[in-house]
Amino acid sequence: MDLHVPTVNEFLEDPSVLRDKLMPGVKYDDFVSALEKIRSHAKFIVKTIEDFDSDNDPTITNGSFYGGIPRTSEKFPWPTCDKCHEKMMSFIQIDLSKFHMDLKDWKQELEEMSLDKWFGSFSGYLQLFCCTTCGKGSIRVVQIDDTEADTVRPGRFDDLVAESFAVKKVDIARFYGDYDFPEYFSLADLRSCDVTKEEANAFDECIDLFHSHGDKIFGYPTWIQGKEEFVCPICSTIMMPAFQFEGDGSGHVDLSMGDSGNLIFFVCETHPCVELMFSMC
Ligand SMILES: [Zn+2]
Ligand SMILES: [Zn+2]
Image (cartoon, rainbow, N blue to C red; front, side, top):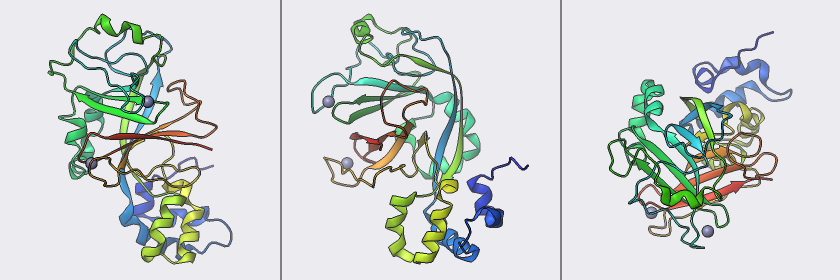
């Protein structure tokens, strides 16, 4: 039995590997011409493989971890929700040095996406905060030599520990690059451009092999019940999906998102505006 599942890159190199995977009644030629037309819409994404540390230590500040209190300084103004004005919760802190090391073969893709504003010089920490009540978020990058990045968590945030998500330390994390295709709801937008109904149907049959479900950075959101759009409250441009995290059972934070939900952070490419979307059934 062949256990090798081709990656999207391999599909792009050689669509014939899919020949045996097509559902009965789907024409291979329709599929290949759909892939040819849709491939220009493929987006570079960053995926992760994570191993969790079972030790739930609320005092950690280094490395990557879900929940808890991230690495901050005395001066750091803890983000509050601009809707309910409550303090947001820390969703994740990501160690960007690891990120950089793992993705060094994807330098060109990363540069083309001009990710500097999100990841700085790819050192230090990326921190995501959220208000789960209002669907608002906040994102910041703390560079390693930033005076904002104290090595010790200041005691003034200790009162937030009880309300924060339980700490899930990511003991081993590996980042890798891949390509992502739109799933059913986003694909519908592209059909009118150039893909025939037959081609779209053929592509739909194999969408799970091309669309990346679960945790990812950038790419196409995994819509469960239809597509939604968010506009930046400052410039009115459509916000882009930046971070998607799988819900229940994923080992992240204790946040109910149904059987197959995702938490998605949308950002404005120009302004520091962040919206959250719970895509779930
Ligand atoms: Zn709120
Ligand atoms: Zn904007």
